[in-house]
Image (cartoon, rainbow, N blue to C red):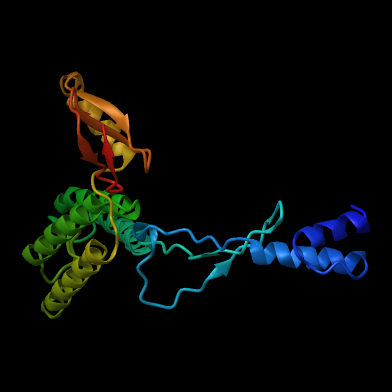
Length: 258
Protein backbone atom coordinates (compact mmCIF):
# COMPACT_ATOMS: atom_id res chain seq x y z
CA UNK A 1 0.00 0.00 0.00
CA UNK A 2 1.13 3.54 -0.60
CA UNK A 3 1.72 6.11 2.14
CA UNK A 4 -1.45 7.91 1.11
CA UNK A 5 -3.56 4.74 1.44
CA UNK A 6 -2.02 3.96 4.84
CA UNK A 7 -2.72 7.48 6.10
CA UNK A 8 -6.30 7.14 4.88
CA UNK A 9 -6.64 4.03 7.10
CA UNK A 10 -5.22 6.02 10.03
CA UNK A 11 -7.73 8.78 9.45
CA UNK A 12 -10.62 6.27 9.35
CA UNK A 13 -9.49 4.84 12.71
CA UNK A 14 -9.01 8.25 14.32
CA UNK A 15 -5.22 7.94 14.44
CA UNK A 16 -2.54 10.50 13.70
CA UNK A 17 -1.59 10.61 10.01
CA UNK A 18 1.79 12.32 10.38
CA UNK A 19 5.12 10.56 9.95
CA UNK A 20 6.83 8.42 7.36
CA UNK A 21 5.56 5.10 5.97
CA UNK A 22 7.20 2.92 8.65
CA UNK A 23 5.76 5.02 11.49
CA UNK A 24 2.28 4.86 9.95
CA UNK A 25 2.53 1.05 9.58
CA UNK A 26 3.64 0.62 13.20
CA UNK A 27 0.80 2.88 14.36
CA UNK A 28 -1.75 0.79 12.44
CA UNK A 29 -0.34 -2.51 13.79
CA UNK A 30 -0.44 -1.29 17.40
CA UNK A 31 -4.04 -0.19 16.92
CA UNK A 32 -5.01 -3.60 15.47
CA UNK A 33 -3.38 -5.45 18.38
CA UNK A 34 -5.13 -3.27 20.98
CA UNK A 35 -8.51 -3.68 19.28
CA UNK A 36 -8.30 -7.51 19.07
CA UNK A 37 -10.55 -9.25 21.65
CA UNK A 38 -8.73 -11.30 24.28
CA UNK A 39 -10.31 -14.73 23.90
CA UNK A 40 -9.88 -17.34 26.60
CA UNK A 41 -10.87 -20.96 26.14
CA UNK A 42 -12.11 -23.01 29.08
CA UNK A 43 -10.03 -26.10 29.78
CA UNK A 44 -12.01 -29.23 30.77
CA UNK A 45 -11.20 -30.20 34.32
CA UNK A 46 -10.92 -33.88 33.40
CA UNK A 47 -7.95 -33.17 31.13
CA UNK A 48 -5.99 -31.14 33.70
CA UNK A 49 -3.25 -33.19 35.38
CA UNK A 50 -3.56 -33.40 39.14
CA UNK A 51 -0.03 -32.55 40.20
CA UNK A 52 1.28 -31.77 43.66
CA UNK A 53 4.47 -30.23 42.31
CA UNK A 54 4.93 -26.94 40.41
CA UNK A 55 4.20 -27.54 36.72
CA UNK A 56 6.16 -25.36 34.27
CA UNK A 57 4.18 -23.57 31.59
CA UNK A 58 5.28 -23.85 27.98
CA UNK A 59 4.37 -20.98 25.67
CA UNK A 60 3.43 -21.60 22.06
CA UNK A 61 4.82 -19.43 19.25
CA UNK A 62 2.40 -16.62 18.25
CA UNK A 63 0.75 -17.39 14.92
CA UNK A 64 0.16 -14.54 12.43
CA UNK A 65 -3.43 -14.08 11.28
CA UNK A 66 -5.20 -11.47 9.23
CA UNK A 67 -5.22 -8.18 11.14
CA UNK A 68 -2.58 -9.06 13.74
CA UNK A 69 -1.23 -11.95 15.82
CA UNK A 70 -2.91 -14.54 17.99
CA UNK A 71 -1.95 -14.06 21.60
CA UNK A 72 0.28 -16.95 22.82
CA UNK A 73 -1.58 -19.56 24.84
CA UNK A 74 0.01 -21.59 27.63
CA UNK A 75 -0.29 -25.35 27.74
CA UNK A 76 0.41 -27.67 30.64
CA UNK A 77 2.64 -30.68 30.00
CA UNK A 78 0.67 -33.89 30.52
CA UNK A 79 1.89 -36.13 33.31
CA UNK A 80 2.21 -39.79 32.46
CA UNK A 81 0.01 -41.37 35.09
CA UNK A 82 1.01 -44.92 34.10
CA UNK A 83 4.77 -44.47 34.52
CA UNK A 84 4.68 -46.18 37.93
CA UNK A 85 2.74 -49.15 36.55
CA UNK A 86 5.13 -49.57 33.61
CA UNK A 87 8.19 -49.33 35.88
CA UNK A 88 6.91 -51.91 38.38
CA UNK A 89 5.73 -54.12 35.50
CA UNK A 90 9.28 -54.05 34.08
CA UNK A 91 10.77 -55.17 37.40
CA UNK A 92 8.18 -57.97 37.67
CA UNK A 93 9.15 -59.23 34.21
CA UNK A 94 12.86 -59.14 35.10
CA UNK A 95 12.12 -61.05 38.31
CA UNK A 96 10.14 -63.59 36.27
CA UNK A 97 13.20 -64.34 34.12
CA UNK A 98 15.23 -64.85 37.29
CA UNK A 99 12.66 -67.34 38.58
CA UNK A 100 12.65 -69.18 35.24
CA UNK A 101 16.46 -69.37 35.34
CA UNK A 102 16.28 -70.62 38.94
CA UNK A 103 13.80 -73.32 37.92
CA UNK A 104 15.93 -74.34 34.92
CA UNK A 105 18.93 -74.96 37.18
CA UNK A 106 17.03 -77.39 39.41
CA UNK A 107 15.41 -79.12 36.43
CA UNK A 108 18.91 -80.46 35.65
CA UNK A 109 18.93 -82.42 38.91
CA UNK A 110 20.88 -79.95 41.03
CA UNK A 111 19.86 -79.93 44.67
CA UNK A 112 17.97 -82.53 46.66
CA UNK A 113 16.27 -85.64 45.38
CA UNK A 114 12.87 -83.95 45.10
CA UNK A 115 14.02 -80.55 43.85
CA UNK A 116 13.55 -81.42 40.21
CA UNK A 117 9.92 -82.40 40.94
CA UNK A 118 9.19 -78.79 41.96
CA UNK A 119 10.75 -77.34 38.81
CA UNK A 120 7.48 -77.43 36.78
CA UNK A 121 5.76 -75.51 39.59
CA UNK A 122 8.59 -72.97 39.56
CA UNK A 123 8.25 -72.63 35.77
CA UNK A 124 4.53 -71.91 36.12
CA UNK A 125 5.27 -69.26 38.76
CA UNK A 126 7.79 -67.61 36.43
CA UNK A 127 5.33 -67.64 33.52
CA UNK A 128 2.65 -66.19 35.82
CA UNK A 129 4.98 -63.33 36.72
CA UNK A 130 5.64 -62.64 33.02
CA UNK A 131 1.90 -62.52 32.24
CA UNK A 132 1.05 -60.36 35.25
CA UNK A 133 4.02 -58.04 34.72
CA UNK A 134 3.25 -57.62 31.03
CA UNK A 135 -0.39 -56.71 31.65
CA UNK A 136 0.65 -54.32 34.44
CA UNK A 137 3.24 -52.75 32.12
CA UNK A 138 0.43 -52.11 29.61
CA UNK A 139 -1.42 -50.18 32.33
CA UNK A 140 -4.24 -52.62 33.15
CA UNK A 141 -5.54 -53.25 36.65
CA UNK A 142 -5.83 -57.01 36.10
CA UNK A 143 -2.03 -57.20 35.73
CA UNK A 144 -1.60 -56.05 39.34
CA UNK A 145 -4.22 -58.56 40.53
CA UNK A 146 -2.51 -61.45 38.72
CA UNK A 147 0.93 -60.47 40.04
CA UNK A 148 -0.38 -60.17 43.60
CA UNK A 149 -1.94 -63.63 43.34
CA UNK A 150 1.28 -65.17 42.03
CA UNK A 151 3.28 -63.45 44.79
CA UNK A 152 0.92 -64.87 47.43
CA UNK A 153 1.22 -68.40 45.99
CA UNK A 154 4.99 -68.08 45.64
CA UNK A 155 5.37 -66.86 49.22
CA UNK A 156 3.19 -69.67 50.55
CA UNK A 157 5.17 -72.33 48.66
CA UNK A 158 8.41 -70.75 49.85
CA UNK A 159 7.31 -71.22 53.48
CA UNK A 160 5.94 -74.76 52.94
CA UNK A 161 9.07 -76.06 51.18
CA UNK A 162 11.56 -74.05 53.18
CA UNK A 163 14.52 -76.10 54.37
CA UNK A 164 18.27 -76.27 54.83
CA UNK A 165 18.82 -77.03 51.13
CA UNK A 166 17.83 -74.77 48.21
CA UNK A 167 14.88 -75.72 46.02
CA UNK A 168 13.25 -74.17 42.92
CA UNK A 169 10.22 -72.66 44.71
CA UNK A 170 12.24 -70.94 47.45
CA UNK A 171 15.02 -68.46 46.72
CA UNK A 172 16.15 -68.51 50.39
CA UNK A 173 17.02 -71.43 52.60
CA UNK A 174 18.11 -72.01 56.19
CA UNK A 175 16.23 -71.20 59.36
CA UNK A 176 17.77 -67.74 59.53
CA UNK A 177 16.37 -66.74 56.11
CA UNK A 178 12.70 -67.69 56.50
CA UNK A 179 11.80 -64.32 58.04
CA UNK A 180 13.78 -62.53 55.32
CA UNK A 181 11.88 -64.46 52.67
CA UNK A 182 8.52 -63.47 54.21
CA UNK A 183 9.55 -59.81 54.42
CA UNK A 184 10.61 -59.82 50.77
CA UNK A 185 7.27 -61.30 49.71
CA UNK A 186 5.28 -58.72 51.70
CA UNK A 187 7.43 -55.86 50.36
CA UNK A 188 6.95 -57.01 46.77
CA UNK A 189 3.19 -57.25 47.26
CA UNK A 190 3.08 -53.69 48.62
CA UNK A 191 5.08 -52.36 45.65
CA UNK A 192 2.86 -54.15 43.13
CA UNK A 193 -0.27 -52.83 44.87
CA UNK A 194 0.90 -49.19 44.70
CA UNK A 195 -0.31 -48.59 41.10
CA UNK A 196 -3.81 -49.66 42.16
CA UNK A 197 -3.99 -46.57 44.37
CA UNK A 198 -1.58 -44.08 42.76
CA UNK A 199 -2.04 -44.68 39.01
CA UNK A 200 -4.99 -44.48 36.66
CA UNK A 201 -5.03 -48.10 35.57
CA UNK A 202 -7.43 -49.28 32.89
CA UNK A 203 -10.11 -51.88 33.41
CA UNK A 204 -10.36 -55.09 31.41
CA UNK A 205 -7.63 -56.76 29.38
CA UNK A 206 -5.22 -55.72 26.62
CA UNK A 207 -6.61 -55.96 23.11
CA UNK A 208 -4.67 -59.14 22.22
CA UNK A 209 -6.00 -61.02 25.27
CA UNK A 210 -9.53 -59.78 24.61
CA UNK A 211 -9.35 -61.14 21.06
CA UNK A 212 -8.12 -64.49 22.40
CA UNK A 213 -10.93 -64.66 24.95
CA UNK A 214 -13.43 -63.65 22.29
CA UNK A 215 -12.30 -66.45 19.97
CA UNK A 216 -12.59 -69.01 22.76
CA UNK A 217 -16.03 -67.82 23.82
CA UNK A 218 -17.51 -68.98 20.51
CA UNK A 219 -20.18 -67.42 18.36
CA UNK A 220 -22.97 -67.72 20.93
CA UNK A 221 -21.97 -64.52 22.72
CA UNK A 222 -21.29 -62.68 19.47
CA UNK A 223 -24.85 -63.35 18.27
CA UNK A 224 -26.32 -61.44 21.22
CA UNK A 225 -23.87 -58.53 21.18
CA UNK A 226 -22.74 -55.91 18.70
CA UNK A 227 -19.45 -54.05 18.48
CA UNK A 228 -19.10 -50.28 18.61
CA UNK A 229 -16.07 -48.01 18.88
CA UNK A 230 -15.47 -45.63 21.76
CA UNK A 231 -15.59 -42.02 20.58
CA UNK A 232 -12.77 -41.06 22.96
CA UNK A 233 -10.12 -43.83 23.01
CA UNK A 234 -11.29 -45.72 19.87
CA UNK A 235 -11.46 -48.99 21.82
CA UNK A 236 -13.85 -51.65 20.53
CA UNK A 237 -16.76 -52.24 22.89
CA UNK A 238 -19.43 -54.95 22.89
CA UNK A 239 -22.99 -54.10 23.90
CA UNK A 240 -26.23 -56.13 23.87
CA UNK A 241 -28.16 -56.12 20.62
CA UNK A 242 -30.98 -53.61 20.52
CA UNK A 243 -29.73 -51.66 23.56
CA UNK A 244 -30.21 -47.89 23.50
CA UNK A 245 -29.15 -45.42 26.13
CA UNK A 246 -26.01 -44.19 27.83
CA UNK A 247 -22.92 -46.39 28.23
CA UNK A 248 -19.47 -45.83 29.75
CA UNK A 249 -16.18 -47.03 28.28
CA UNK A 250 -14.33 -49.24 30.82
CA UNK A 251 -10.93 -48.06 29.55
CA UNK A 252 -11.22 -44.24 29.49
CA UNK A 253 -14.51 -43.84 31.47
CA UNK A 254 -15.95 -41.70 28.68
CA UNK A 255 -19.76 -41.67 28.46
CA UNK A 256 -21.65 -41.81 25.16
CA UNK A 257 -25.23 -42.12 23.97
CA UNK A 258 -26.24 -44.94 21.62
